[in-house]
Length: 295
Ligand SMILES: Nc1ncnc2c1ncn2[C@@H]1O[C@H](COP(=O)(O)OP(=O)(O)O)[C@@H](O)[C@H]1O
Ligand SMILES: O=C(O)C1=C[C@@H](OP(=O)(O)O)[C@@H](O)[C@H](O)C1
Image: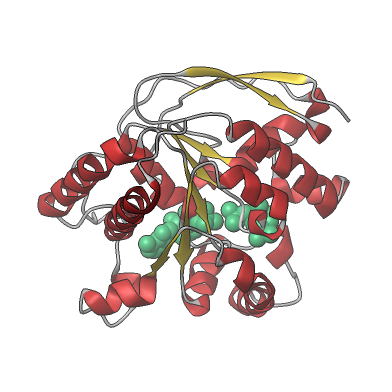
C-alpha cells in the first residue's frame, strides 16, 4: 500500500501527567509545522493537528497530598536538568532522539521532559500509528487487524519521522525488533531505558494491562501477567535493545545516587542521566569522526 495521508503536524502541549496513554502526542519548544506522510496502513489517516507548546511542568513539581506525580524533587534538580540540556544542545545539532525500551520503561514520561528542556517537539510512535490507522488504541489495532499490520504502520511512522529534526520520539517497546527501524532511528540518537522487570511489572500493574495487548491476559493478575510476558520479551529482545547508542540503567543510577530501589528515582533523575550519557556519546563521536554535521 502506498502512502496516502498527508498528516499536518504541529507541536502539542506536553502535560506533567502519566505516560502518553493520557495524551496522544505532545510537543515542546516552538510551535513547528511539518508534513508527515505515512505509508502502508495509514491510507485512511485523518489530518493530525496539535497545538503550540506549553512547558511540561512547573520548574519544580514535588509530590502533593493529592498524589500528583513528582517530576522534580527540588528546584536544584530542575536547574541541573536545564543545565545538562544546555550543555548538550549545541552538539546535538538538531539531531532527533529516539527512546527505546520495554513497555512501561518510561519512554513517554522521560521523552516529554527531554523534549521540553531541549526545545524539541515530542512524538509518540504508538499515537501516530493510532492516528494514521484511524483507531483509538493500539489494542484495537492488534484486535481488528494484527500485530504484523501494527508493525508495518510503526515502521512507516518511524521512516517518516526519520526525515525530520529536533524531535524526541517515544517508540513502542517492540520497535527495536525490525532491523529497518534501526536504519531510521540511526539517523538520530537512540537511548535505551533499562528498567528491572519487577519495577516494570509494578508500574504496568498500577495502570492495568488493557492498553498493552501483548501483556493482556485476563486469566492472570496484572502484575503476574506483565512480569511473565515481559520476561519472555526481554529475553527475545535483549540484542535488539543493545543497538541503542546510549543505555540508561536505572539500577546503576539508583546505586550511584545511594537509593535502595529504582522506584526512588524521579523521571527528572532519569532525564538528567540520559542527557549526561548523550553528552558523553556525542563528545566521543565528535572526537572520533568529526562533529554531527550531516543533517
Ligand atoms: N521514573 C518513574 N518512576 C515511577 N513511575 C514511572 C516512572 N516513569 C514512568 N512511570 C510510570 O510508569 C508508567 C509507564 O510509563 P510510560 O512513560 O508510559 O512508559 P512507556 O512509554 O515506556 O511505555 C506510567 O504510569 C508512568 O507514570
Ligand atoms: O513491546 C511491544 O511490542 C509493544 C509496546 C507498546 O508500546 P509501549 O512500549 O509504549 O507500551 C505498543 O507499541 C504495543 O503494545 C507493542
